[in-house]
Image 1 (tube, rainbow, N blue to C red):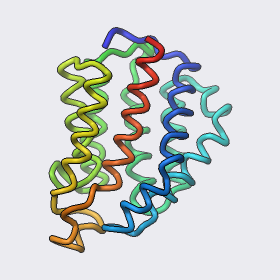
Image 2: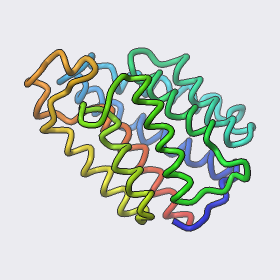
Image 3: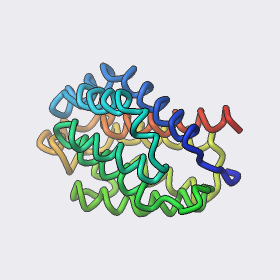
Image 4: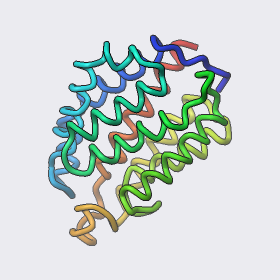
Amino acid sequence: MEKLQMTPDLLRSLLQGTAEAVIAQAEHLTVLDQAIGDGDHGINMKRGLENVLADLDNITAKPPAETLKAVGMTMVMKVGGASGPLYGTLAMTLGKEWPTDDELDSAKLSQMLVASIEALKKRGKADLGAKTMLDVLAPVQQALEANKSMAEISAIAQQAAEATIPMKATRGRASFLGDRSIGHMDPGACSSTLIIQTICQLLEEKS
């Protein structure tokens, strides 16, 4: 990935694109969560991201780092269950780690994701292999560290989400099912992949 100057307009288009992509798949996310969770992941993500879209003008009027923190706060305040705190932590940590010159490249994004993964581990008291969104974010971070292309990162995210299907959940509500959690994609891994693939696609289109 070449160096990228993250302007407010570009960040706005990424936020709008990812929010719309996840909202469009809300029903699919709910079906996944009905199999091994509360059945509300799609509904919760839709509610939170609709609030982000409704306030997008105000949110993106801030500097990019503050924009991400505002997105995180919106998710925490508007989304119930585990999704709000986890996605809120992700967005707020990315904002906290944002470079002062708003210039991003694969190495910097990788560093930001390392910090975000550590924050998510603490927030969710989970680790890799527990059948959570971390099982997608970790290989994506490694792909960024290796300076893979957007297309490669998109494919790696999809493979990582599919790799959660044979996993046995050891964190979250799915862990209550024990072996019955095996055979289903983790909803958080799916929504994470949707966001990553949308960002990859939008950045490719603008390059």
